[in-house]
Length: 83
Image (cartoon, rainbow, N blue to C red; front, side, top):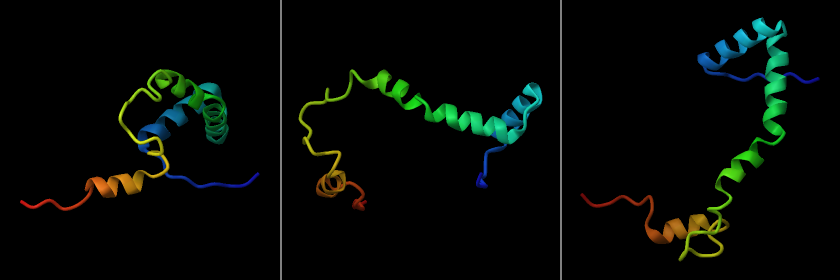
């Protein structure tokens, strides 16, 4: 197994430590379980929540997801405005 170092917010670390004490498992085991659980279907559940909205906006270009930078540049997004 490989080692990975990450920085986590204090609140999340406290939550992981509390869960590891409660379940009498190592913090590494808790993190591994959380990561594997997040990988196994959360994105599907999130998509189900907005699936009825996909394609519901009229008047936008069909290739907006592929050419978003070009459309934003043409619309003037991000340019400095005169005061």
